[in-house]
Length: 308
Image (cartoon, rainbow, N blue to C red):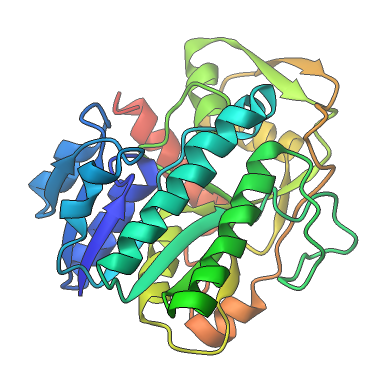
């Protein structure tokens, strides 16, 4: 296949391009010139086109003769989305509609979209969370991701533009930024090694689902080839891990006693989130291969080498 990864110069996109190239596919990465991992993908055989996905003229040429489009471009995270919901909608939802129109005109065979398994469901009514669980997100980020899912279905109904949605849990691994509002594992590891005080929201007992980035890339690659009846899949580790458990594991790895500043849960923080991944196991023939402790150890080794 010829695969285009829009927003492919970041953490997830760089791992996806590696997985697709390793499988023998042709890969083109489209992202802004300042995207950190563009050169990494170029060295491994991907072609690179730079531009702004908000500008249809920039990415229309990249769609030429493309079979599968991976839509990874996003400008917000849950915290920033709630600070400016209008900007979140304008950049992520309206931008996606431009992309879908261009994909339809270019006769793209399939779009694969990484949605958010951590936000689209909202406060869980049951655990683990199946794909059939109600979707009541409590952040603009989750609402926008869900709206993109709905428009993907609409374009399938109206234009037969095929799609697959992966509702991904908390992805982590090498190349994820080690500072900022997302990526607690890398942020906590880097902060521990720098002797920083780490901010924790809540008492640390809430469970989250974590999935290592190579397993995410594998799922994304499989999604492009799937021809089954389902178009929405949860992708996670299938287990819950608390922040307190993560702190303990990081202390064991770094031999550093972490100093934490514990603050109340934020309005958009769900109390717990663990995904049921049985559908992906059965229909994508996918399951996570990297155990949580092993994945955290790999990130620790990567940061310790100064790569983070």
